[in-house]
Amino acid sequence: MILRRLTDAFRKQDWFTVLVETMIVVLGVFLGIQLGNWNEGQADMRRGSAYAQRLAIDIRTDIRDRSYLLAYYEAVNDSAERTAALLASGSPNPRELVVNAYRATEYANHQPTRSTWDEIVSSGDIGLLPPDFVEDGWGSYFTDVTANNAARNILASPYRQRVRRIIPHEIQRAIRENCGDKRDEIGNVTGFRADCNLDVPHKEWAAAAAALLSDPELLPDLRLHFSSISSARGDLTGSMYSLQQAIGVLERASTGTKRAPTE
Image 1 (tube, rainbow, N blue to C red):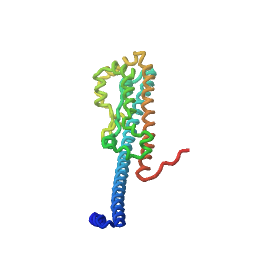
Image 2 (cartoon, rainbow, N blue to C red; image 1 turned 135 degrees about the horizontal axis):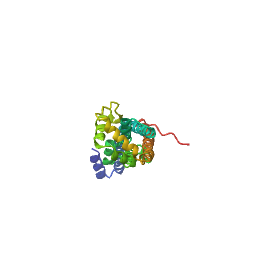
Image 3 (cartoon, helix red, strand yellow; image 1 turned 120 degrees about the vertical axis):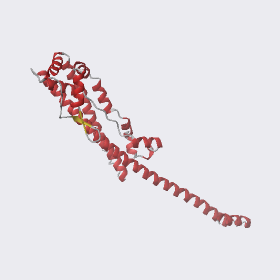
């Protein structure tokens, strides 16, 4: 319709009508572009808000899992403390010494929940995330190796290597199978089993305990091992505190609340 009127106006050299019709066309195109941009912006805002909510859920899951991992390292530390006390005593219970010495060498892993983050990266939608989240570098969490570093340090500990060289394989296997890790309903390691039903003859416990007690480097290595356990616990505690801050950033974004200015 407009094109026909514009053509007729050209034929009649009705320049005023030409100008008006042209402005109508240009305005219509402009408003159409603006409306399209607005709709696209609204869709991006909704998608960014959904991403923020999903990331917050993932991080809450990780905080829960890391709290379980921290509880596990607390149990490892308790076993190390008990081992040190038993080594310093005159005549420790052989079974108690061997079990605690072995448990003090244990470790566990935890990987960040990456499904939402990987989707955001692969789709090129990082720009839709809250600016505070991106600018503060929270994305680096999803390549975080805190838990793995803790496990790696304990795995390389001279104390762990020494204990596992000394304790016979049969006893180690019995401890792992009948007195090992305690897990929750979804498989998270939370500590050690209380029901240690170990069918090992007393003389084998006594021999393993005597071998531990006779090694002059065991106690010094255990003292160093405490540092690895302490680092694991400290790193996990710090990471959980940081993750709580990241959740705050994501929740403010999903509700439209701005970050309070820093002093």
